[in-house]
Length: 231
Figure (cartoon, one colour):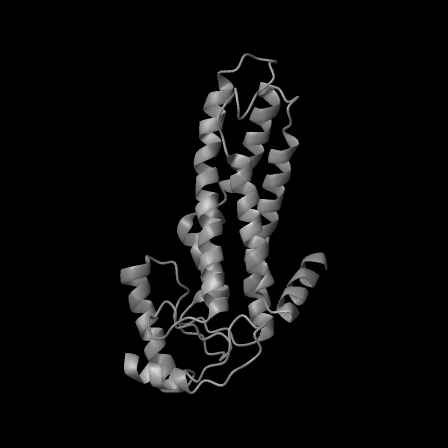
């Protein structure tokens, strides 16, 4: 099977570097059925439900625009979290910080930030292994071919965002516990000489990784997706 995939991949014509997924010939009906069956099996055994189902085969710009919307929801939530964290300045009291952390916790506790749901959201848009659209056929998870640079970068950015999100989720209850020990009305000192935390660097790092991921999205899809959010 791998030999067949590799031989087919070797004949792939080149296309524009700006596209997230370049064309490949692995879209004939037989190979597509094999990939769908393999994906469902791998999802049940290896990936724990993080891949999209074998019946989902987006093939139009409109479908990809719809799949991009949850990714943009995550982008918006991460930006809101950074605004909240940066808003808690040196003059903030215990109560100010606890209110801020409650707001952050409300956002970061959304189901979409759960590990499997998070991966599935990104995979449904860009990382699944069985797409029928030749610009989206990604063999990275199937192990059938070497991923192209933009595919690998998208995959790494997704994992970078997720890792930082999980760290923020762990940091919030820790900070709540530490700040609760500060006397009422007192200013909270974070960092040197105060409560040790790297929540700001975690949140800003997640947003930086998200920005890099968004840069990989085909411009026409991103433009259409953002337009839908303002209508």
